[in-house]
Amino acid sequence: MSPVIWWTSVCGNATEDDAFWSDSISVNTSNPDLTRCFQSTLLAWLPGGYLWLSSLFYVPVLAARPTCSRWADTSRRNAVKLVSVVVS
Image 1 (cartoon, rainbow, N blue to C red):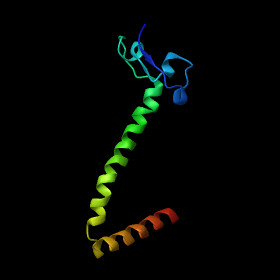
Image 2: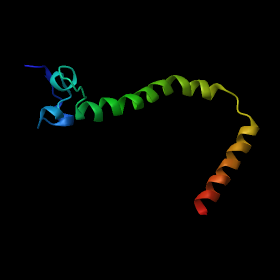
Image 3: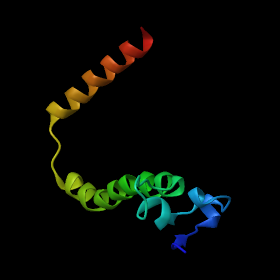
Image 4: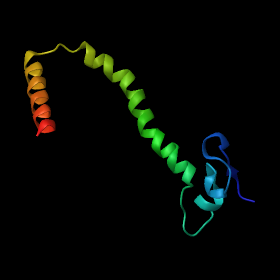
């Protein structure tokens, strides 16, 4: 019997492909694949989690930097370009 890890509150438990992890699908096979639950949870949440975690360290660095009027002019110019593209 291959180890199967279920995460029923997120993925349900209808088939083995709905399991969070299954060795018979992922490891012990000639055509390895990841389960649908693993793909839709961990592979989707991991990049977002990394961005949120790194923003905790990067936002204070950005907040401590002095602003420059040139950046404000660029922001206004980009806003005008955005509005003109949306309107046209």
